[in-house]
Image (cartoon, rainbow, N blue to C red):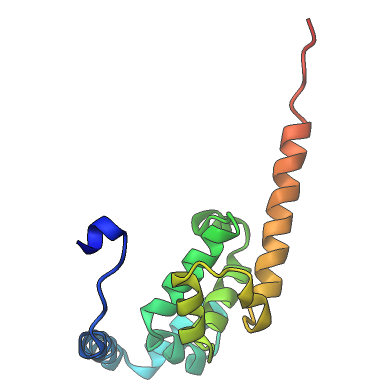
Length: 150
């Protein structure tokens, strides 16, 4: 009946908690296998501090899912950004994973309220600039297509 109405079944608070706890424990177990030197090397390769790397390792994956949805809303490809704006994408991920508004962001995305992030999202200015740049590049490509008149 829920499928007919297009509604989502209510999520279990305990189920969500259990899923989050399992995910956190799994990340903790993986992090314990790394020695401090490995963490420093990876952090240096990513151009972030070891503290930020550990913070990212323990960030809930939902925050990165939310970022992916925000990128899609702005019509930005995460794969394309990884090539053309790797530093900016890394910063977007870092900021998103450390954001204190994850719950609000996820709720707004679920409700398709994409206008409100401008009120609280620290990544919003960067997302808007990247979207504007992509639009300008697309417009330039369209205008550069030679038109043949018969």
